[in-house]
Length: 332
Image (cartoon, rainbow, N blue to C red; front, side):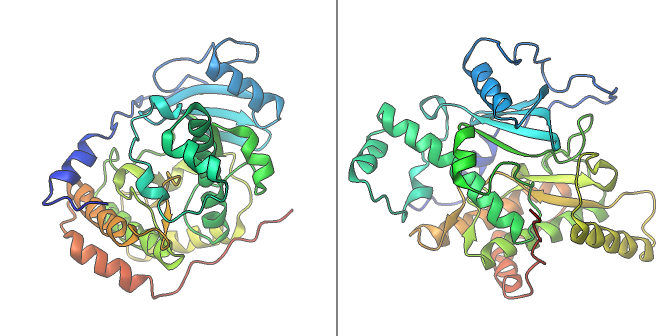
């Protein structure tokens, strides 16, 4: 990975992101969200996306698509329902149509035992693109499961943990919806925060990056564009018993009350978007970690947090030496 001088590269990274999350000021129950009602995304409908939805339905993962939440360059997010409640379906576009062309930087250091497969992926042939697509999806599931089980603040994966199960959902990733169907949690880049909320979000974001680093990970795209802000009132009705997390939430609320913070609600930062997560085996690890620190500090400036990338990196490295979050106990 070549060095890019100054701040230009970061401005480009941030400006290139799709930041338009359309939200309604007033919501009614069962009113479609996002840009359009998905009348076409039903079982038996035509089109590639419809076939994927049909497959997810036949597999028993979803029962109904509620609405399109957001359409970006890499994937489209849908709000759906299923046996386990409200679901976020992240449907990746075909690699050849996606803008994330420099994905090789995140795959360096990975071992591909099949030489023909390695050459196919490098040449980006049709077979190679299909393998990259599956690898991108399975990587996100695998990372989600590891981070979720480790106790990090990430969406709960709803397929797996066996790769045999989640490979069948390619090119879709299914996870629990953060927020509610009528009010999905916004990205921090779109949220309007009070100074106290901004400071809380910043501290949680530093801790989240430190938790990743403790596990040997660099996110690869860590900024307010890939961090959700979930208010206490946005706890999903479909969320199922994570007693340890609930206890932590109550302790957090008690702390906020004891500090006599009034007229504003506490919130939780949730980290998203993990297919590009990279490990220390990647020769670009240190530079990607530094880029994450720069991106986080830059993107938080709109919330009034003024801290440089170098100071952010040092603070994250310091916190990574501290205690880890409590692992979740996943019952059968």
